[in-house]
Length: 215
Image (cartoon, rainbow, N blue to C red; front, side, top):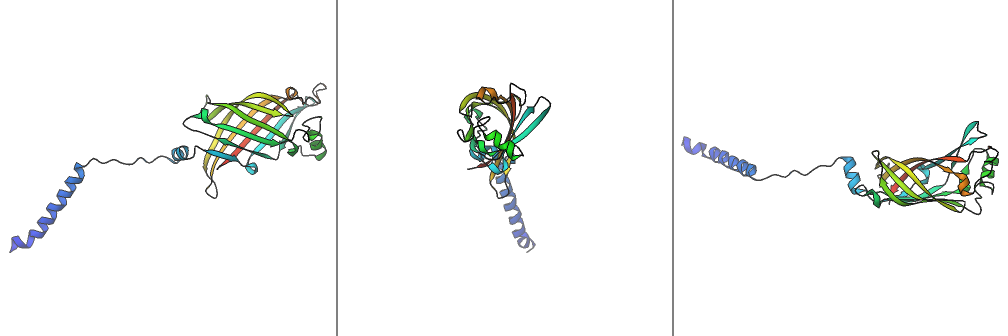
């Protein structure tokens, strides 16, 4: 009777050991869990619309060789694509409204919109469009070569852009940001007012910060 009484226990133990042995005998493959950055890089290599609210274009120019003057453009739009695996497949097109130039003082802003400078009525848009993109020397940078059209004149420009970051926005939209600083010779675009007298510098530094929302 004692043997029969303990038989179910022995049978259960034997079955448990058999199942364990079978599980150990099967090869187990663990699914890789990518980091958050890797997941975004894989899933979000796509087109982004430039968010004009969270993007900024500033300019800096010398004034009578004695100080540096800053201004901005308030209307920015466009789109870009970024391919993590193949940076050469990336692209950007950015449009700035010339009449959105803001020099803090309205009379000065009007002067910058006039034919002396941007001639914003005749040439309402300032456009940059990439022609080629390559990985930069530093991490998270790209060398972007394209055409800048200002006041109806188109010139080649190469810009080093730095990736600021990427991730989900407040409402879950995928965001990506880029930043660049480069200098142009405004005289090459026919914007030469004040250069000869030294009133306004020939070289203009542009500071561009862009945020894009995945389409």
